[in-house]
Image (cartoon, rainbow, N blue to C red):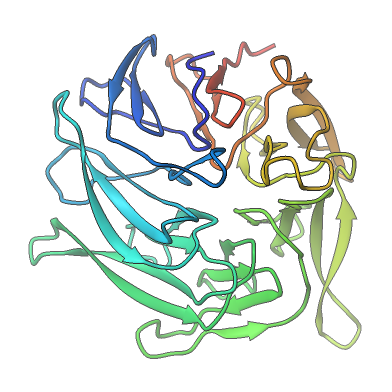
Length: 352
C-alpha cells in the first residue's frame, strides 16, 4: 500500500530528474525508489456525489519542452482536458486547460500520425471523436500548445487504436465499429466500418494479433457490465471481414481498463486487467462483487486466468480507471501500480 487515497488514475515517470521512477496519482507524487515521501501537485475537486476526483488519466509528456516531465489529465464533470506543468521543485504545479471536450470517460495517448510523438485522445461518449497534437517550433521543441483534429462526429463508450486492416496506418476502434485511417490525415476522411457493437467497452480496447495468424484481433472488457472477450478477425467465403467473439472471463464485471504486456518475462504478451471498484458508485451490474486483479495468458487456444489479487474490499484490489506497469526497482521484472477508490498500491513482481 502506497496511500489510502481514492484517485482512480496512476502512472510512473521520473518527476525530479534523478534517474529513478516516481509514482504520480491524483494530487500527489511519491518519490522513488521507496515511494514513502509524498509531494503535493495541486488542488483537485471532489465531484459526483463525493466519490470521484477530477482526475481520470495520467499521461506523461514534456509539453513545454523544458526537460521536465509534465502530465495530461481530464475528467467527466468539468468536461475539460488539461496538462499539469512540472515546476522542477516542491512548489505546486500549474494547471493549463487544453480544451473543453465534453464529458471525459478517460484519455489515452497513441501515435496517430506516425511521427514518433504521441497524440492525446479523450474518450467522450456521445460526442465527436478527436485527438490533440502537440505543436512544435521550427527547431522541433514542444510549444505547450495543441492542435485539435476531429476524426468522427460521434463516439461511444470505449476506445482503441491499431492497424485493423494491415495497411500500415493506425485505425480507431469505437463501440460500434472501426474508423479506417485515410492515406492523407490532413485532407482525407476516416471511414467507419460498422462491423460490430461492443457495448460499454473498455478504454482501451486492445488491438492485438492474439492468435498469431497475421490479422489484428480485439480484446474488449465491459466497463459497466459483466464480460471480458476477444474478437477474432476472420474472412468469410465471400472475402468479407467478420469478427468471431470468444469469451475470456464472463464472471466479473467492470473491466474498465487493461494493458497488454509480457508480465512473466517469457517473451509472450499477457493481458492484465481487473475489476474497477465502484465504477458507478456500486450501481453497475456486479458493482458490489468481490474485487480482483488478474493476468490472462494465451495458451494457443484460449486465455488462462491467473489471480494476482482477489477478495472483499481491503483484501482484493481493483484497477481504477488508469493503471501502470513498470519496473520500479530495476529488477528486470515489471510491477503493477494500481490506483482506485480502494487505494493506491504496488504489486511487486517477484518472478515466481
